[in-house]
Amino acid sequence: MIGANLEMFCLLRNRQLLRQLCRSLLSIIVIFSTLLVVAADAASSADIDSLAEPAQQIDARLPAPVIGVARAGNDLFSVGPHGLILRSSDSGKSWLQVPSPVASDLVQVRFRDAQHGWIVGHDSLLLHTRDGGRTWVVQLDGRSLLTLLRETYGRRASNGDSTAQDMLQEIDFAMGTSASPDVLAAPLLDVLFDANGQGFVVGAFGMILRSTDDGATWEPWIERTENDRRMHLYALAEYQGRFFVSGEQGLLMQLDPQSQRFLMQETPYTGTYFGVRAFSDLLLVHGLRGNLFVSRDQGQEWVKVETGLNASLVSAVEQDGQLILVSQSGEMIAIDRGNLQVTPLQAANAGEVYAASATDKAGKLVVTRFSGAQVVEIAQAK
Image (cartoon, rainbow, N blue to C red):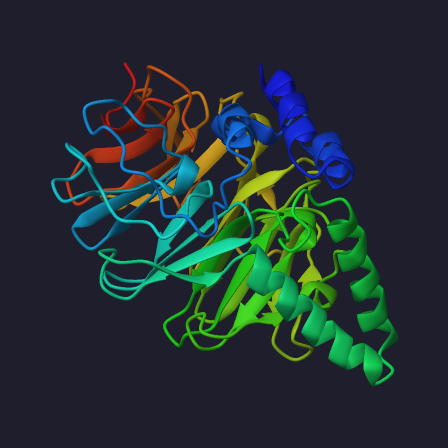
């Protein structure tokens, strides 16, 4: 099913450009399979400008597919296709739709604190809230990003920067195959800010940008990464100013404060890392087929944790003092951060899982599925 959905997706969006995406994601696109299903519906409404149109109101009586989920204080937020943003104020029991300024597909939501949050999605989309998710505004989209890239690299190229000239050629190639001549349609896949307002947004084809003012302004950092092959960048992590990026084909990079570049770190795995988490005593990367690796020295040496899981790991969640890994099949394990002992937990059955988040209720997580967000119990497997 994943392969079939991917083939359909390739026919619907920027064809030549996405051949690269299709080739590298054929076996790893599991966490975005729902988006591929709804792409056909999006194509049927190709005459609608999804960046200019607000999300339509859905029927609250029917289940709605959601992809990303995050906690903001005592509230939960989930996002999904066609600009869908949902909010729960009762620990995930019920969800209400929040007005969204766009109708593009949304894939990830992050909150730095109870008030400041960001959402990323297709069409190079980035939304921001300053009021706890009650209202959202566009900080980036495929039009403004295209303008930013061309102006930034054009200015540097005119001053003799050969790297900037190469970047302009990459942009022209991408736009030459775009279905929308004024929109850079590659999806943004994650966003993260620290307490000082420094942050990054990452996405497909090596896209990465930096902001130092909570996203009010952005600077392209594509050439500031050891990612010449433009691997897709899936996830961000930060701890005390240390930023990490994980991506496909075993890619893991750490921000070097001296050179202001993301430098590659060797890991024991060449498959995709869908997630990365950073703690004071632990750096963790997870991805395909239950693969989980941890380091206690910021990535110099790695230990493989035998998870006992075969499905891709989609989320690493802190809840009730535990670090819980959730797989795409709904299986869950708890990891002891001290001795790395694995404890199998009762599976969150009843469908494919795309992401998971902590809640404000002890012993409960919320997971996202095609059928909507669902609260699941955390209990040891029998």
